[in-house]
Structures are given as structure tokens and as C-alpha cells.
Amino acid sequence: MKEIIWLGNSYKRVLDFPTEARESAGRELHEVQHGRMPTDWKSIVGIGIGVIEIRIHKPNEHRVLYVARFEKAIYVLHAFQKQTQQITQKDLKAARTAYAQIKKDAKEKSKRSNSPRRLR
Image (cartoon, rainbow, N blue to C red):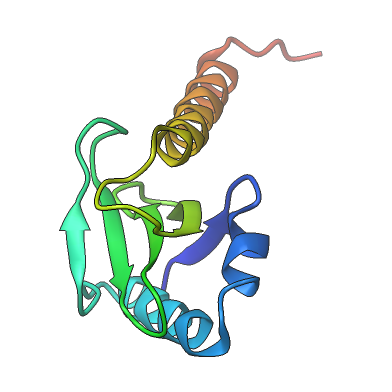
């Protein structure tokens, strides 16, 4: 079972969802941890490869954006209540920033593991 890593303020934002939406988000992420797809989801283009939107319709429209394509964990990029037909630029920017951080951290880790080590 993959670990869930919450980026930015995504965890707090899900906690701020109404109870029904929060519980639904938890159930859906649990499914993802077990290698299954959420009940209602959509691929999101323009944030990064493999970003998925969990769609929660009750009591209002809520979304949880995550990426599970990395071996280490499921990264929750952003969570929000949807107010309009499309995802707002502000919400897209928050998710892009979180995705960029994952890529940056992976690159730095790769550099550290590939750097020559001296024996003393």
C-alpha cells in the first residue's frame, strides 16, 4: 500500500471539506492506495504527467488532485471546492507548484545518490 504525501495545504483543505465530502475523499484515496481508480475521476492535462482529479459531488462540488505514478507515494497536490465549470487558474497554479516540487525533490535526490562518495 502506497503512502499518501500531502503537499502544500492540501491536507488542511480536505479537513475543511464538509463531513460527507471529506469522508468521500478519504475513501477514494484509500482505493488509490490499493492500486484502484477512484469512483469518479478525470485526467487533468496541463499540470503534469499522471495528474488525476477525484470528483466529489455531494454536498457540493469538491476536487482532490493527486498523482500516483511515482513509486514512493501518492502525492495529493491540491484540494478545493469547485465554484465554476472549469478549474480556476489559482487552483491550477497551486497544483502545478506542488507537482514542480515533487520533480525538484526527485531530481535533487537523484543527484545525491549519483554523486561520488569518498571513503576515509
